[in-house]
Image (cartoon, rainbow, N blue to C red; front, top):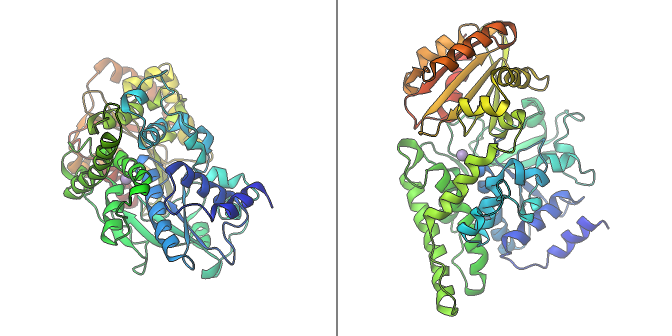
Length: 481
Ligand SMILES: [Mn+2]
């Protein structure tokens, strides 16, 4: 028996409510073992969207943790839920650098004080060995022993399986399965989606029989819907004394994406709903009750719960998260792609990168305008991507958002003008903030015309809007071209 398989066998004896660290380690051992799926054991993979942001990561971990807890209570028969990060090219060992906010959220969840987490060498805040216990698609792809590997290999079997042969998927934070490198046909031949919790517009992929099938827009964070669902179903445990600690860890973890996505509950419109506010209140009540316990039983000074410091610590890690990355890593960090057919039948790949820094910062980081444009062109024209449309959504320090749309394909000529016409809800305003930069960009774009194609830059007048609105709009415009 291999080490992983042995570890899986031993883990059967572990307590029902494991600590976050031992839970993730147990899940990793299972995912990488040869008996992740067997006649005795059936699994469902809980997976977020390919941007793999904090919301997708933590929705998957929290959902799986509590579904497995119920499974333990029932003992046998039901599936084991394994959280898998939708990252086909990033191994878990690289997450500390590529997703530093994961590391910060995990350290805070484990109880490290926010000020201690924020200190230390720039770029090292996300370092924690717990991230190595996460499972990415890349980890599965390169692990031959894992019985899950075959579902993610880009070559190999694409023939249709029987329903029983398909791997169960529970989608969080998206509602139409999307795994970079695998076509829609391959995905539907290998996976069956049996559950979904999401806060994006319903793409009508998920069967009406899925359990649960929760697709509700207007909610800041998918994690809020996850926590609400678990409570509604009676799956959120009421803490028993000795098991408080793991529940507090999960509660603190769940709080991270909700506070980030709702800007610490200060966001407006669709970005912060009553459900987000109620869930935060609920999670904080669990965290505070434990702080009170600690205060009663210890003589040292109490560590009062400070939601503001908690939010600031993760938010800073996220804002600084591009510092250590190369340009392709920056574009890839929070990236989504769709394929749409124009009315004349051309298939167009549409990529959108969400970036936490403004254009001026990106140009400087790239080393100048020439290098910046070359990096855009290299990324979009890469053979793996072949983008017909590439969109950058940035954020400036003053809370403004820039929208850059580039088209690289004759078939989508006039895209930028039509996007502008249709984009009334975004309140697009021509980007003319830095006249000199605009002129230099224009000149450079023209010089490189044949490689960069059409492009336009705007400010988004309604800053409550995001990729959730820009993505569907771009897709719609391409379909109608
Ligand atoms: Mn989300």
